[in-house]
Length: 162
Image 1 (cartoon, helix red, strand yellow):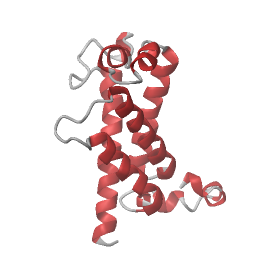
Image 2: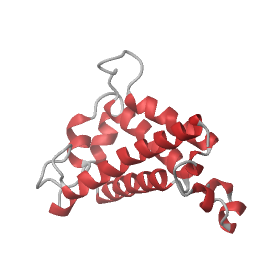
Image 3: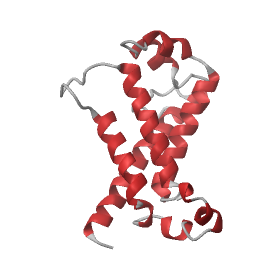
């Protein structure tokens, strides 16, 4: 394993942890972006506040109409969990990366503000580009279970599952 392979594995693990941590924080209200008592286990919608109050731009009405919808909450939480686990474990990285990039671009379009520290790019775009690069670089093999996963017959038959 070369230095760039190790770097790709570390990037994959770091982004996986970002998604997985967001999932844990929203489920249990660990006091970071989700305050204690405002968690999913307390019956609080993980998307309501953001969709109702933080959406801006041309898609505001659409996103606000989704606020508090249980199906949206489930899709959001399952998305965070799926993306986080695929990236951390190094399995199904292509699917996890695609859906992670899609989620981030949706978040970006919901807040649709020019970035505050740069007029063109924010972390949603940078993370999306890194995730999209994972689809083509196969970083699950490095510091993960990807080498084992790719030997499974179903994965060999359907490379999208790599």
